[in-house]
Length: 306
Ligand code: MLT
Ligand code: MN
Ligand code: ZN
Figure 1 (cartoon, protein in one colour):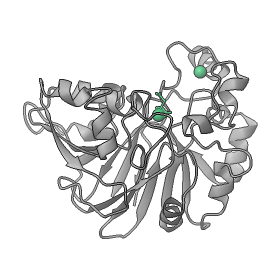
Figure 2 (spheres, helix red, strand yellow):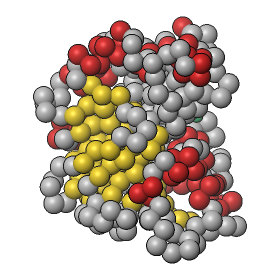
Figure 3 (cartoon, helix red, strand yellow):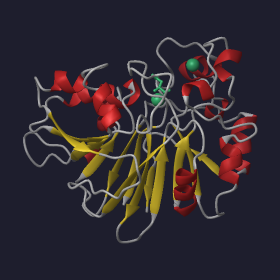
Figure 4 (cartoon, rainbow, N blue to C red):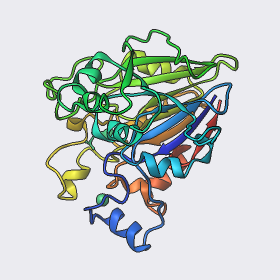
């Protein structure tokens, strides 16, 4: 099984179009040692290197495809290696890219929970709009940890676990999240039995997810904010990270404390990094702390073989 990080930034990307925070200005002006990053997505393949599942459809999908020749095998006049799509939630940064795939010559096979399906049918009716183009073929994903196979991607076993985070603002229960609004994906190679956990939105740790993280060879987890009040301290928002469904890295019960408790051999990677997060600055003390703890920061184009 191979995982390719297509987009390692949170919603907005890095730099964000209208943001002049220290990080965004610095990367724009070339005065900060940091790499630009596109919005949140990974791709997964199993036995066949020309069959990939796209996990989340980022608003930056076209740039991500351009940067990933492996996803464009060009076997026919119209062709793509993306054979299925799996969504962890219905947020804009994970779904707006679906519009960009409307030229598909067959309906898009999309795995998502009922909650995400409702939001993408009503609050933000992307699925309805796509019915005027390629259409979608919805595949039900239950957030209960049951094993499923994404048929088109052989050799990979999938599970979706409900996580405490936040549904999109256009969800009718934005402020009272329900199980299935956001999931973590647990993916495992059927042959090597090596697995990974992908959880770009994770508001608090829960037993089933923690169990899966301890069993995984690699975890790609919520790296949105370094501190809970990061957006407030920079004058950019009134909300705390936890209010937005993202567990910060620092502080009591923060992500670093959790990651420190994983078995020593586990590969630890932060993903879905917000542009305000000081870990993007490769010369920051926060980044140095990650390095000391053996924690990596995902980058666009990063590949993981399991
Ligand atoms: C989130 O992860 O909290 C959302 O994707 C934020 C957004 O809408 O960009
Ligand atoms: Mn997001
Ligand atoms: Zn910024």
